[in-house]
Structure formats: C-alpha cells, structure tokens
Length: 149
Image 1 (cartoon, one colour):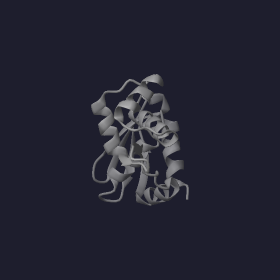
Image 2 (cartoon, one colour):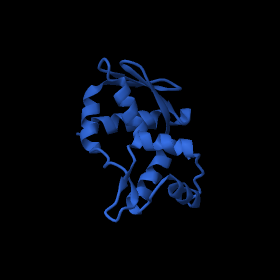
Image 3 (cartoon, helix red, strand yellow):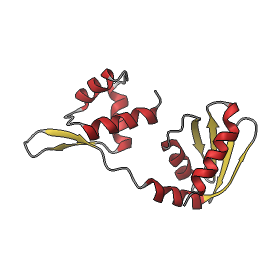
Image 4 (cartoon, helix red, strand yellow):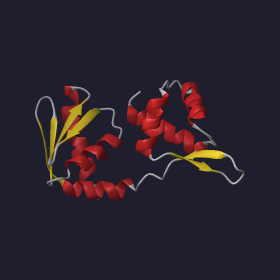
C-alpha cells in the first residue's frame, strides 16, 4: 500500500473511532491488512498533523486536523501552473518561480494510482506515471484537475 492510501486509512480510522494511541492504531491497521512500522506511523503522524489530545474523562484520543478545502487549494495551485507538457516517459509541469514544490505536493496528495510520484525543483515539476501507457491520461487528468475553478 502506498503512503497516500495508508494515510487516508489512518485518517479514516482516527475520525471514526476513539483511538487512544499509536499501539492501538497499529493493531487496527494490522486488522485491515496494513502492516506498518511504528517509526513509519510516527512520520505519518507528523506529516498529517495527528496529535494526542486529552478527553473530557481524562483519557487520550488521537485527532487529525481537518483537511484543507481541496477546491480552494486546487484553484490556487491552478494559478501557479504555466504549462503541462509530456513525452513518451514523463510529464513536466512548468510553474511560477518558487511554486513547483507546492504543485508537486498537491499532486502527491491527490492519491491517484496512475501517478507514481513527483519531483519538484524551483519552477518545474516532474510527474512520473505508474506506467508509460498512462502518460496521456495522467496529463489530461492533471490539466483537468488544475483548470477547475
């Protein structure tokens, strides 16, 4: 399971249950068929902003911050993109100077199985498709997702 899907499942479990700590969550993930190391779970927590809060009865509960408004972010990211181009093996996104990291991060969080990952420089994002047969559909997907208001 890739990181994005694992983090999606972690968020789902935290939001739908009263989970008191990492060990309990590790057990729940294992029941779902997701085996993850405690160190990996800690990194996921840091990236996702998951914290342990005290409850009214004196116990503890894991909580994740609400996800940002995807539509708002999508509009902002779309304004930072200048062009999307591709060849037989990869897709390149040209951005405003200094904006590539944000665009790449946004694409990584979309959890599209056809996108293996992104690498961002200052004003260029390299999008690596899961397979070269998906170049055209991934490029179209990116253009569509970034052009929606």
